[in-house]
Image 1 (spheres, rainbow, N blue to C red):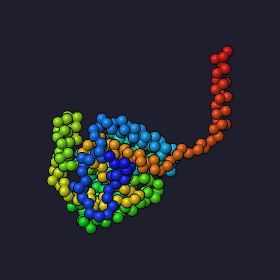
Image 2: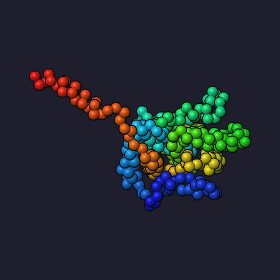
Image 3: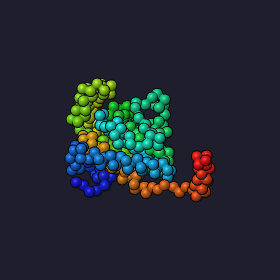
Image 4: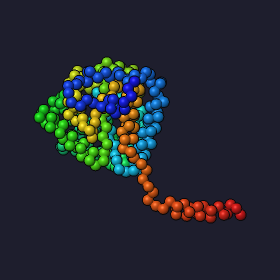
Length: 286
């Protein structure tokens, strides 16, 4: 089992030639079975909630989590089972679907920026600005010269957020085409999940290789120190949950956050409160 932090273990490669097909989506880093790690996942989730409280109280940092995956890759499941432990008062989930006519009338980042987290807050992007170098590329929705320029615009955008105190974590939930098909089959067999089925889920499978190439380029071109990409083996949902929660915790702990000092005289307020409490108890003593 690897002893390195998960934030190092699953960080996307920097430089050189690499392909997603060479990264095993079923890897579990030597761990076996969700029952054995269920307690560990819960511990990380609880620690994540504590760190989110520090993030909010300190008010110096913000956190942006980007989730990207092929269809059925586990974005919703990650939000529900891992990030769902965060306090919803300080956490915002932004899903990015097909752009509206109004959004199409603006630059591709126009609809994204309002959802960036303010200091003390967490934003989770369910899909993101990367769709504009993925689906538009695969389906030839804009000229190649246009979507290629967007890599630089994305890097500029993420640099701007980082300079304003936002920590950015980008997760590609890496599944195999066989696992995707198994998950589609489970949706067909489960009446509670049939509403999620669309014809596009199946028709998009024919573009699997094109999407993999698009993801490889997006990750390689936009994998920076201030906004790193992580490739998470996601065929096993329990391992996906463990890896994401560990990386979030490791990253937040690295910020060395602390509760701010009180902005009032605690001793003075304590004396005043105790005096009022004693007065309120006087009728009970009579």
